[in-house]
Length: 309
Image (cartoon, rainbow, N blue to C red; front, side):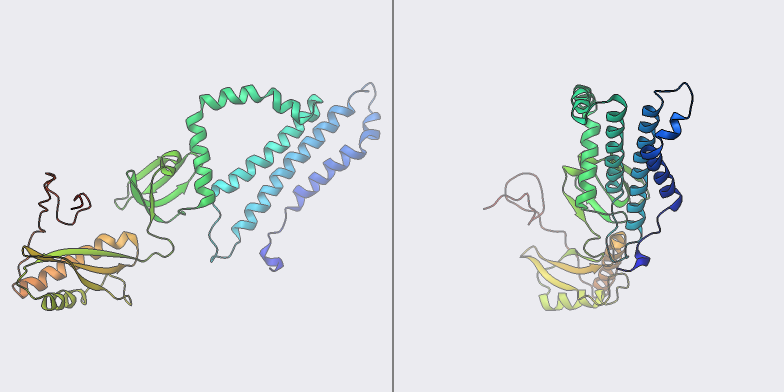
């Protein structure tokens, strides 16, 4: 760690804090010079200490934010919620100490007196509090970061734009803004397509006639996929038999997507290339066989809704 990694402290703010501390410690003889003001020193001393506390809280938060902003790019960014929490903690401590000075009570008395008020307010804004604590948990656990593409089950899919105390903002692939309460996000399953890497594996499926040999079908599909330009290069794709039956053979083509916003482009390209190759070879594409399990919901064979035998 070098000195360049640490931000330069604001010298003017430090000088003001130092002057306030010096006044609170050594300023009484100066105040006594003011005629007919015998009780002025106490309030002035408390005011100086309170100002020094609030300025110190502001200084510490600024130094922490500047220090974290200069982290190396290889390290994950610190969530904004964590910095906001630090600010709240520092200023709350300064406020409690200031109240203790002005009202001449210890901190336990002040906290006890405000307990009932806090309980009433907490019940009235319990949903807001739940969103705030959920936002804090999301910020500290960091299941996603700003810029990640995520799927929040049952709610939305998109790229994270902002993570706040109460809500998280997403931008969908259609450039639509979605604002979700953090308490709802924390209760859902989250799929992050950008972590730990942006590239991930996807697949497409198609059903070909059973009288077409598997080896020949794989060769036809592989020849089409080799011409794809949008899937990730340098990663091996696979063509596998997914289902086999007299009604047709279903093949699953596994490939790598460079990032989530290119998923639809890659899928469209693969289907177009495979379709063109099959038509040149005069191979028919069959509908996927429907399951006859007796459940009556008309789902496809192999669907997770199919009950076990």
